[in-house]
Length: 269
Image 1 (cartoon, helix red, strand yellow):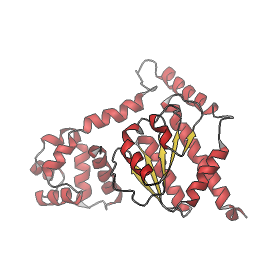
Image 2 (tube, one colour):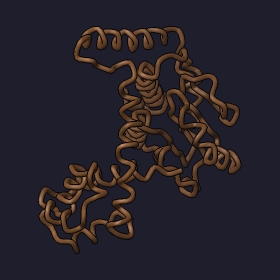
Image 3 (cartoon, one colour):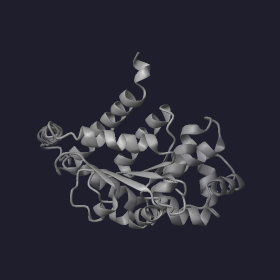
Image 4 (tube, one colour):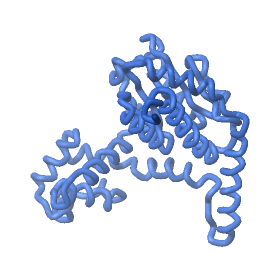
């Protein structure tokens, strides 16, 4: 199932980050974001007025984003609040300030993260990491999957691997297109708790049927579909989601570090 609301934000983000300051599409994207909570009740004329453009420019903007018309875009924006709630509800875990005990809440949050990272001592499977890196090095087509913060870390991993000359394609687990990774021979799934692995069953089954090698990086040893993966890199003990995110950052650093030292050691001479 595709999360079209998340897809909408990604498209708007791309326009804002890559357009010139005076580009009318940038102005429209900015106006849309600033009025997202009331956008479903907004007319195209009002949108044009707020963004200092014309209704015809708005229509071209909508079509350039892949939507049929302004009405379709309004329909897709309705899930904005739900999407935001899902994202921020995850963010608030262990860090819900109440304006009364903020220091205590923050200190506890730091303790959770530190404890999680300390438990990695003696728990790093370096041989497993090297084996996965060897699979990556030997594979011509690689797909990478993630969502939310793990997705952002996965994109960082993708960018770093590209600097090594290794082409990887990233897919957001909330925007799955089952027809997309046709040429992939190896797929990496970054999921701290494995929450989106079950909902990705179709793409996992399809990839397995095509003979792909599947690798999962997680801290959860009780994922239902674990038997579908050729290699699973467990990030120490299964503890808090927040601590798990920081562990994932460490694991990605270690994976990149050991990949570089193994296959680019000539750079160090």
